[in-house]
Length: 133
Image 1 (cartoon, helix red, strand yellow):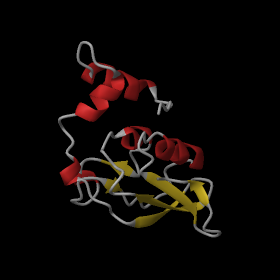
Image 2: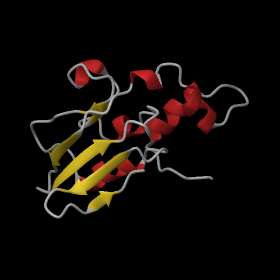
Image 3: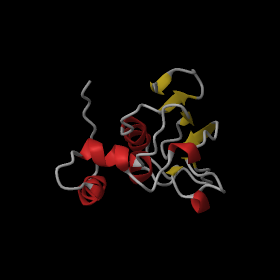
């Protein structure tokens, strides 16, 4: 099954640099040596307030996440693969004190995951803004 994902220019350049001769970008994502599935953890669900004042609950489905890092490239204020950025967890949703991200960018970050491991739910209605899995 083929899916297309919209990437920022920075994310695309990172993937091109990681790609070996004869590899597709998908191959480079799967082969990424810096990220190990065994180290990935689900941090549960946290509430994020966007700059527009919208409250959404964000979560990462542990069994689906392979650590491609697209979410962290698109919205590094709330997603990270770096332990130091998210309080010791190897992957997860960073807690931010200020609403630093627009809802549309948060949605793009969740939708950038090729494995659909990230979901966003409206905190008030419980409806999915982006449905994972």
